[in-house]
Length: 128
Image (cartoon, rainbow, N blue to C red):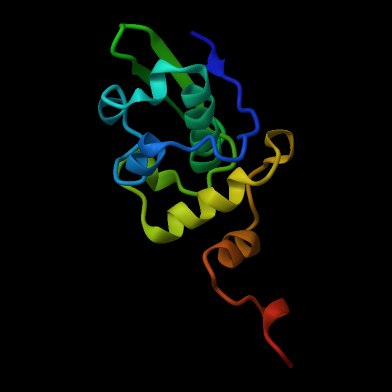
């Protein structure tokens, strides 16, 4: 089974299932009930979310309602806890920011980038 390759998300491509995803973990048991797996666009969206949320080397595999297995690989790792539990507000914000970066430019963020995405002021942002 080949992991789905992350792509760019077209503006407006996010559906009600994507909103529902924010209330679930990325665990394989919570995904088959969602229609995201039923369409190529939905799978591309899920691939991008997983790519941003989970770190390189981590992946999820799930089986769609029709029995087709799909694997999605992590890359940036900005919300690794999402694999086990619904994301926090900060995790959702970090993933949302990551989704705006072209897939080919995603890499594990620095601690400063993570802090900024979470809304924490870093020394370079503090007025002197």
